[in-house]
Each structure stands twice: as C-alpha cells, then as structure tokens.
Amino acid sequence: MTLQKKIIELLGVKPVIIPEIEIKNCVDFLKKYLVNHVHIKSLIVGVSGGQDSTLTAKLCQMTAETLRKEKNDITYQFIALRLPYGIQYDEKDCQDAIRFIQPDQIFNVNIKKAVLSSEKSLKKSGVIISDYVRGNEKARERMKVQYSIAAMKQGLVVGTGHAAENITGFFTKYGDSGTDINPIAKLNKRQIRLLLKNLNCPKHLYLKKPMADLEDEHPQQDDESVLGVTYDAIDSYLEQKKIDIRSQKIIEALYLNTLHKRNLPITQ
Image: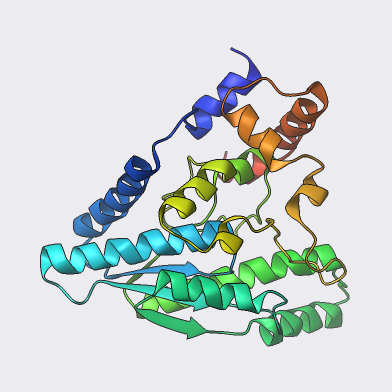
C-alpha cells in the first residue's frame, strides 16, 4: 500500500461526496451523541470567521434546532464563542458568519490579556517566547475558554479540524485539536466549501482564503504560504488523484514530520 492510500484510509476521506448527504450525516452524528449523553445540552464552537468554524457552527445550530423539535426540549442549545486576540482584522467576516449561523447564544471573550499575562509570567521565570509560540498560546487559550464555558453550560466542545489540516499537522497540539467531537474530520477543504455553498453561506465566506492568523509578526498570512503547498493539491492528494511530485513530497513530509501531533501520549 502506498503512503497516499494509507493516509486516505486513516483519514477516511471520500473521493466524491453528495453535499446534502454529508450535511445530514454530520447532523445525525452530533444528534446521536447528544441523545446518548443526556447530561449534555449544548454544543460549543469558537467562530473565527473562516470556512471551517462557519461550517461546523452551522451544523451545530441545525443539530440543536432539530433536537428541540424532535425531543420537544428547549434546553438543547448551540453556543457560539467569539474569541478575538485584541482587535481582529477580519471582524466583519466574523459578524457575517454569526448572522449566517444564527446561534442560540453568543459569548465574547477577548483572550489578549490572558495570553500576555502568561507571556509575562514566563518572562519573569527567564523564558522569552517567540512570536510563533505566542501563536500556539493563543490557540490553547481559546480552547481553555471553550472548556470553561462548556463546564458551566453542560456543553460539548466541537472541533473544526478537517482532513486537509490533519494530513499536514496544521493545528496546535492541545489547542484547536483538543476537542470532544469533530463532525467534519473526514472532509477536505474543497468539500467544506461545497457544503457551505449548499447551505447558502455568503459567497465571500466560503471562498475566503484560509488563514490561521496566529502570529503577530505575520498578520493575515494565508495557510498556503506557510505550508508551501496549495489546498487544491492537498485535496486532490486526499481524493487519491495524481498530483505533481513536488507537492506530493511536501505533503508527505508534512504528514511524517507531524505524526506526534496525531498520536496519543507515549506510555511505558
């Protein structure tokens, strides 16, 4: 088995999807978990204004609305969290995403003071962190806030990670990867856009250039510039298509170099 086939099998990516069926599968997946865990009443997503969180949040809102009707239980809720670091450059996109999602509840928590406080404490101990590490601090602080709110709201923290991020390791360990459940894990970027389009998401949101925007020194730097390969190539690779050898080598090197991010902690 080639490495490409092995990766595709592990990540479970389908070469072709039918948007309506995938949307239903994602909602049913979330519904089933909630029905089987009666103490959980809310779904929680940090909404950034990007494609991944917009799709995940919309699926969660649909799930909550469906359960309220089917179970005649108004306690099922979707909670959207806005977790900016200071002033977010693309705040308008975030607000457009919120209007598209129509969450039951919204909480706004600015993480900047918490991140800077942690950095200050480290500096006092003689550890000066880099801009890159500060970016990881932001991702972990956002996840910390999500779990605090989840604990108080009988909530489930829903992840926004997908196959194109997973294969490249383009996520923060114990940050955005540290969630309870992930309905879009088997989708690639192309498929995420397709689902958003099917759900009548505003065009400027589902066609938005993906960017993590974690580094202060490189604001609004797009993901593809960091990865050195396009999402189109990554998606084609995950759909078992033949791509140019340069892109294939980059993708496979990223996958192998970030195995530790996808593995459980090492034990004796």
